[in-house]
Amino acid sequence: MKVLLWNCRGAGKPSFAPTCRRFVQQNRPDICILFETHLSGRGLQKARRVLPRSWGFYAVESRGLSGGIIVTWRLESCRLDTFHVCAQEVIMVISEGTNDPWVLAAVYASTDFRERRWLWEEASQLVDQGYSLLMAGDFNCIIDPQEKMRGKPFSHERKGLARVWERLDRACATVGWVQRFSDHRVSHLPRIAFDHCPLLLSTDAFVPVHPPFRFEKMWLSYPRSWEMVREAWSIPVRGDAMYRVSRRLELARRRLRRWNREEVGDIFRRIEESEVAIVRLQDQEVRGGGLSDEDVGELRSLLALNDCLLRQQEIFWRQKARVQ
Image (cartoon, rainbow, N blue to C red; front, side):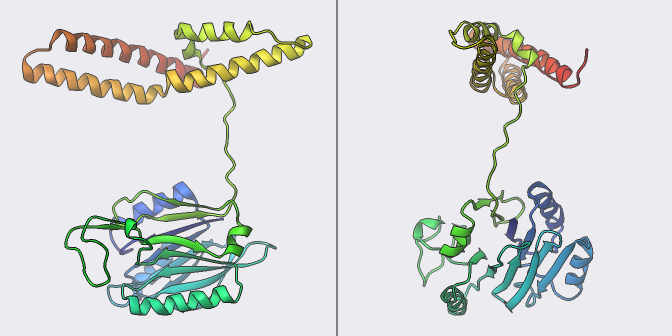
Protein backbone atom coordinates (compact mmCIF):
# COMPACT_ATOMS: atom_id res chain seq x y z
CA MET A 1 0.00 0.00 0.00
CA LYS A 2 1.15 3.54 -0.76
CA VAL A 3 0.08 6.67 1.12
CA LEU A 4 0.73 10.17 -0.23
CA LEU A 5 0.62 13.01 2.34
CA TRP A 6 1.05 16.61 1.24
CA ASN A 7 0.64 20.06 2.78
CA CYS A 8 -0.45 21.73 -0.44
CA ARG A 9 -0.99 25.22 1.05
CA GLY A 10 -4.23 25.72 -0.85
CA ALA A 11 -5.93 23.19 -3.12
CA GLY A 12 -7.70 25.97 -5.01
CA LYS A 13 -4.53 27.36 -6.58
CA PRO A 14 -4.26 27.02 -10.39
CA SER A 15 -0.93 25.19 -10.02
CA PHE A 16 -2.34 22.61 -7.58
CA ALA A 17 -4.38 20.41 -9.96
CA PRO A 18 -1.65 19.63 -12.54
CA THR A 19 1.00 19.13 -9.85
CA CYS A 20 -1.20 16.81 -7.78
CA ARG A 21 -2.29 14.88 -10.87
CA ARG A 22 1.35 14.29 -11.82
CA PHE A 23 2.21 13.05 -8.32
CA VAL A 24 -0.69 10.59 -8.44
CA GLN A 25 0.10 9.38 -11.96
CA GLN A 26 3.78 8.84 -11.16
CA ASN A 27 3.42 7.21 -7.75
CA ARG A 28 -0.07 5.61 -7.87
CA PRO A 29 -0.93 5.97 -4.16
CA ASP A 30 -3.79 4.01 -2.60
CA ILE A 31 -4.51 6.79 -0.11
CA CYS A 32 -3.96 10.49 -0.76
CA ILE A 33 -4.15 12.99 2.12
CA LEU A 34 -3.99 16.75 1.60
CA PHE A 35 -3.40 19.26 4.40
CA GLU A 36 -4.09 22.99 4.55
CA THR A 37 -6.49 22.80 1.62
CA HIS A 38 -8.17 26.16 2.39
CA LEU A 39 -11.40 24.58 1.14
CA SER A 40 -14.88 24.49 2.62
CA GLY A 41 -18.48 24.39 1.41
CA ARG A 42 -18.68 24.64 -2.37
CA GLY A 43 -14.94 24.33 -2.72
CA LEU A 44 -15.06 20.86 -1.17
CA GLN A 45 -18.04 19.89 -3.29
CA LYS A 46 -16.13 20.89 -6.42
CA ALA A 47 -13.10 18.88 -5.27
CA ARG A 48 -15.30 15.83 -4.74
CA ARG A 49 -16.78 16.06 -8.23
CA VAL A 50 -13.29 16.08 -9.74
CA LEU A 51 -12.47 12.68 -8.24
CA PRO A 52 -13.66 9.50 -10.01
CA ARG A 53 -16.33 7.42 -8.29
CA SER A 54 -13.77 4.68 -7.65
CA TRP A 55 -12.22 6.93 -4.96
CA GLY A 56 -13.63 7.50 -1.49
CA PHE A 57 -13.69 11.01 -0.05
CA TYR A 58 -13.62 12.52 3.43
CA ALA A 59 -12.91 16.14 4.32
CA VAL A 60 -12.40 18.47 7.27
CA GLU A 61 -13.44 21.99 6.35
CA SER A 62 -10.99 24.85 6.68
CA ARG A 63 -11.48 27.67 9.13
CA GLY A 64 -11.59 30.65 6.86
CA LEU A 65 -8.33 30.66 4.90
CA SER A 66 -6.46 28.31 7.22
CA GLY A 67 -6.48 24.57 7.76
CA GLY A 68 -8.54 21.93 6.02
CA ILE A 69 -7.86 18.24 5.42
CA ILE A 70 -8.94 15.99 2.54
CA VAL A 71 -8.61 12.20 2.60
CA THR A 72 -9.20 10.19 -0.57
CA TRP A 73 -8.59 6.50 -1.19
CA ARG A 74 -9.03 3.84 -3.86
CA LEU A 75 -12.11 1.85 -2.88
CA GLU A 76 -10.76 -1.33 -4.46
CA SER A 77 -7.48 -1.13 -2.51
CA CYS A 78 -8.65 -0.82 1.07
CA ARG A 79 -11.43 0.04 3.48
CA LEU A 80 -11.02 3.26 5.44
CA ASP A 81 -13.07 4.11 8.52
CA THR A 82 -12.65 7.37 10.46
CA PHE A 83 -13.18 7.25 14.22
CA HIS A 84 -11.73 10.56 15.41
CA VAL A 85 -11.61 13.93 13.68
CA CYS A 86 -10.45 17.37 14.79
CA ALA A 87 -8.76 20.37 13.22
CA GLN A 88 -5.31 18.86 13.86
CA GLU A 89 -5.78 15.27 12.73
CA VAL A 90 -7.96 12.60 11.20
CA ILE A 91 -7.56 9.15 12.75
CA MET A 92 -8.54 6.25 10.49
CA VAL A 93 -8.65 2.48 10.64
CA ILE A 94 -7.17 0.91 7.49
CA SER A 95 -8.32 -2.57 6.48
CA GLU A 96 -6.70 -4.47 3.60
CA GLY A 97 -8.44 -7.69 2.63
CA THR A 98 -8.31 -10.28 5.40
CA ASN A 99 -5.29 -8.71 7.13
CA ASP A 100 -5.58 -7.18 10.59
CA PRO A 101 -6.47 -3.48 10.49
CA TRP A 102 -4.05 -0.76 11.54
CA VAL A 103 -4.45 2.89 12.55
CA LEU A 104 -3.35 5.87 10.49
CA ALA A 105 -3.34 9.33 12.07
CA ALA A 106 -3.07 12.05 9.41
CA VAL A 107 -1.58 15.01 11.30
CA TYR A 108 -1.79 18.71 10.58
CA ALA A 109 -0.52 20.13 13.86
CA SER A 110 -1.27 23.64 15.01
CA THR A 111 1.45 26.29 14.94
CA ASP A 112 0.53 27.04 18.56
CA PHE A 113 2.53 24.72 20.83
CA ARG A 114 -0.22 24.89 23.45
CA GLU A 115 -2.75 23.40 21.04
CA ARG A 116 -0.23 20.80 19.90
CA ARG A 117 -0.18 19.41 23.43
CA TRP A 118 -3.66 18.00 22.86
CA LEU A 119 -2.32 16.21 19.79
CA TRP A 120 0.54 14.61 21.75
CA GLU A 121 -1.84 13.52 24.51
CA GLU A 122 -4.16 11.81 22.02
CA ALA A 123 -1.19 10.09 20.38
CA SER A 124 0.03 8.87 23.78
CA GLN A 125 -3.38 7.38 24.52
CA LEU A 126 -3.40 5.48 21.21
CA VAL A 127 0.09 4.15 21.88
CA ASP A 128 -0.84 3.09 25.42
CA GLN A 129 -3.83 1.13 24.06
CA GLY A 130 -1.46 -0.98 21.96
CA TYR A 131 -2.71 0.00 18.50
CA SER A 132 -0.52 -0.63 15.46
CA LEU A 133 -0.22 3.09 14.76
CA LEU A 134 1.33 5.30 12.11
CA MET A 135 1.27 9.09 12.52
CA ALA A 136 2.28 11.10 9.47
CA GLY A 137 1.87 14.58 8.09
CA ASP A 138 2.84 18.14 8.99
CA PHE A 139 3.81 18.28 12.69
CA ASN A 140 4.70 21.99 12.53
CA CYS A 141 7.69 21.50 14.82
CA ILE A 142 11.22 20.19 14.56
CA ILE A 143 12.84 17.44 16.62
CA ASP A 144 16.40 18.75 16.56
CA PRO A 145 17.99 22.18 15.88
CA GLN A 146 19.84 20.55 12.94
CA GLU A 147 16.48 20.24 11.17
CA LYS A 148 16.49 23.99 10.57
CA MET A 149 18.46 25.91 7.96
CA ARG A 150 19.11 29.66 8.03
CA GLY A 151 17.32 32.24 10.11
CA LYS A 152 18.07 32.76 13.77
CA PRO A 153 18.95 29.78 15.97
CA PHE A 154 15.95 27.76 17.05
CA SER A 155 14.14 29.18 20.05
CA HIS A 156 10.64 28.98 21.51
CA GLU A 157 10.57 32.76 22.00
CA ARG A 158 12.06 34.27 18.82
CA LYS A 159 11.28 34.13 15.14
CA GLY A 160 13.86 34.61 12.41
CA LEU A 161 13.37 37.37 9.87
CA ALA A 162 15.05 35.59 6.94
CA ARG A 163 13.58 32.79 4.86
CA VAL A 164 14.21 29.50 6.64
CA TRP A 165 13.92 25.78 5.92
CA GLU A 166 12.63 23.38 8.55
CA ARG A 167 11.76 19.69 8.54
CA LEU A 168 8.11 19.76 9.55
CA ASP A 169 6.71 16.82 7.57
CA ARG A 170 7.54 13.35 8.85
CA ALA A 171 6.17 9.90 9.65
CA CYS A 172 6.33 8.25 13.09
CA ALA A 173 5.20 4.74 13.97
CA THR A 174 4.89 2.41 16.92
CA VAL A 175 7.16 -0.59 17.29
CA GLY A 176 4.26 -2.90 16.43
CA TRP A 177 3.60 -1.10 13.15
CA VAL A 178 7.30 -1.14 12.19
CA GLN A 179 7.57 -4.87 12.94
CA ARG A 180 4.46 -5.59 10.90
CA PHE A 181 5.63 -3.54 7.91
CA SER A 182 9.36 -4.16 8.17
CA ASP A 183 9.90 -3.29 4.47
CA HIS A 184 8.26 0.13 4.70
CA ARG A 185 9.84 3.16 3.02
CA VAL A 186 9.29 6.91 3.36
CA SER A 187 10.33 9.16 0.47
CA HIS A 188 10.27 12.93 0.00
CA LEU A 189 8.91 13.85 -3.43
CA PRO A 190 10.16 16.97 -5.28
CA ARG A 191 9.09 20.33 -3.89
CA ILE A 192 7.58 21.79 -7.08
CA ALA A 193 5.42 24.95 -7.14
CA PHE A 194 4.80 24.60 -3.37
CA ASP A 195 6.99 24.94 -0.28
CA HIS A 196 6.32 21.53 1.29
CA CYS A 197 7.73 18.21 0.10
CA PRO A 198 5.02 15.56 -0.30
CA LEU A 199 5.64 12.38 1.70
CA LEU A 200 5.22 9.03 -0.03
CA LEU A 201 4.96 6.10 2.35
CA SER A 202 4.97 2.52 1.09
CA THR A 203 4.35 -0.60 3.17
CA ASP A 204 5.22 -3.01 0.36
CA ALA A 205 8.54 -4.74 0.00
CA PHE A 206 10.76 -3.21 -2.67
CA VAL A 207 11.43 -5.73 -5.42
CA PRO A 208 14.12 -4.49 -7.81
CA VAL A 209 13.34 -5.12 -11.45
CA HIS A 210 16.30 -6.14 -13.59
CA PRO A 211 15.62 -5.76 -17.31
CA PRO A 212 16.66 -8.71 -19.48
CA PHE A 213 20.10 -8.49 -21.03
CA ARG A 214 20.21 -7.58 -24.71
CA PHE A 215 23.30 -7.08 -26.80
CA GLU A 216 23.21 -3.56 -28.23
CA LYS A 217 24.35 -3.26 -31.82
CA MET A 218 25.78 0.19 -31.13
CA TRP A 219 28.40 -1.50 -28.93
CA LEU A 220 30.00 -2.86 -32.10
CA SER A 221 31.24 0.67 -32.88
CA TYR A 222 33.53 0.32 -29.82
CA PRO A 223 36.55 -1.96 -30.45
CA ARG A 224 36.62 -2.66 -26.72
CA SER A 225 33.34 -4.60 -26.93
CA TRP A 226 34.92 -7.15 -29.27
CA GLU A 227 37.91 -7.52 -26.95
CA MET A 228 35.70 -8.12 -23.93
CA VAL A 229 33.80 -10.90 -25.66
CA ARG A 230 37.07 -12.55 -26.74
CA GLU A 231 38.48 -12.29 -23.21
CA ALA A 232 35.35 -13.77 -21.64
CA TRP A 233 35.29 -16.60 -24.17
CA SER A 234 38.96 -17.47 -23.58
CA ILE A 235 38.57 -17.98 -19.81
CA PRO A 236 39.06 -21.69 -18.93
CA VAL A 237 35.80 -23.26 -17.76
CA ARG A 238 35.40 -26.86 -16.60
CA GLY A 239 32.31 -28.94 -17.24
CA ASP A 240 30.39 -30.42 -20.11
CA ALA A 241 30.03 -28.57 -23.42
CA MET A 242 26.62 -27.02 -22.66
CA TYR A 243 27.75 -25.73 -19.27
CA ARG A 244 30.93 -24.20 -20.77
CA VAL A 245 28.85 -22.33 -23.37
CA SER A 246 26.35 -21.12 -20.76
CA ARG A 247 29.09 -20.04 -18.34
CA ARG A 248 31.01 -18.08 -20.96
CA LEU A 249 27.84 -16.35 -22.11
CA GLU A 250 27.21 -15.34 -18.49
CA LEU A 251 30.76 -14.00 -18.13
CA ALA A 252 30.43 -12.00 -21.34
CA ARG A 253 27.06 -10.62 -20.23
CA ARG A 254 28.41 -9.44 -16.87
CA ARG A 255 31.45 -7.78 -18.39
CA LEU A 256 29.49 -6.04 -21.12
CA ARG A 257 26.84 -4.78 -18.70
CA ARG A 258 29.49 -3.34 -16.33
CA TRP A 259 31.45 -1.84 -19.23
CA ASN A 260 28.30 -0.25 -20.65
CA ARG A 261 27.45 1.29 -17.26
CA GLU A 262 30.95 2.58 -16.48
CA GLU A 263 32.32 3.60 -19.88
CA VAL A 264 29.58 3.90 -22.53
CA GLY A 265 27.01 5.45 -20.21
CA ASP A 266 23.72 7.05 -21.18
CA ILE A 267 24.18 8.15 -24.79
CA PHE A 268 21.09 10.39 -24.68
CA ARG A 269 22.51 12.32 -21.72
CA ARG A 270 25.95 12.42 -23.37
CA ILE A 271 24.40 13.89 -26.54
CA GLU A 272 22.78 16.66 -24.50
CA GLU A 273 26.00 17.39 -22.62
CA SER A 274 28.06 17.53 -25.83
CA GLU A 275 25.54 19.89 -27.43
CA VAL A 276 25.69 22.22 -24.42
CA ALA A 277 29.49 22.26 -24.56
CA ILE A 278 29.47 22.92 -28.33
CA VAL A 279 27.05 25.83 -27.95
CA ARG A 280 29.18 27.28 -25.14
CA LEU A 281 32.36 27.25 -27.27
CA GLN A 282 30.57 28.59 -30.35
CA ASP A 283 29.10 31.48 -28.33
CA GLN A 284 32.54 32.14 -26.90
CA GLU A 285 33.94 32.25 -30.44
CA VAL A 286 31.28 34.75 -31.57
CA ARG A 287 31.66 37.05 -28.56
CA GLY A 288 35.46 36.93 -28.41
CA GLY A 289 36.17 36.97 -32.15
CA GLY A 290 37.90 33.61 -32.11
CA LEU A 291 39.14 30.69 -30.05
CA SER A 292 42.52 29.60 -28.82
CA ASP A 293 44.17 26.58 -30.42
CA GLU A 294 43.27 24.53 -27.36
CA ASP A 295 39.60 25.55 -27.54
CA VAL A 296 39.51 24.89 -31.30
CA GLY A 297 40.80 21.38 -30.69
CA GLU A 298 38.21 20.84 -27.97
CA LEU A 299 35.42 22.06 -30.25
CA ARG A 300 36.48 19.72 -33.04
CA SER A 301 36.62 16.80 -30.61
CA LEU A 302 33.13 17.65 -29.33
CA LEU A 303 31.73 17.85 -32.85
CA ALA A 304 33.24 14.47 -33.70
CA LEU A 305 31.92 12.96 -30.46
CA ASN A 306 28.46 14.37 -31.06
CA ASP A 307 28.39 12.93 -34.58
CA CYS A 308 29.48 9.52 -33.27
CA LEU A 309 26.84 9.58 -30.52
CA LEU A 310 24.10 10.53 -32.98
CA ARG A 311 25.02 7.56 -35.17
CA GLN A 312 24.92 5.30 -32.11
CA GLN A 313 21.50 6.71 -31.26
CA GLU A 314 20.28 5.89 -34.76
CA ILE A 315 21.54 2.30 -34.40
CA PHE A 316 19.87 2.07 -30.99
CA TRP A 317 16.44 3.12 -32.29
CA ARG A 318 16.74 0.93 -35.38
CA GLN A 319 17.34 -2.07 -33.14
CA LYS A 320 14.43 -1.13 -30.89
CA ALA A 321 12.17 -0.78 -33.92
CA ARG A 322 13.39 -4.14 -35.28
CA VAL A 323 14.32 -2.56 -38.59
CA GLN A 324 15.81 -5.20 -40.87
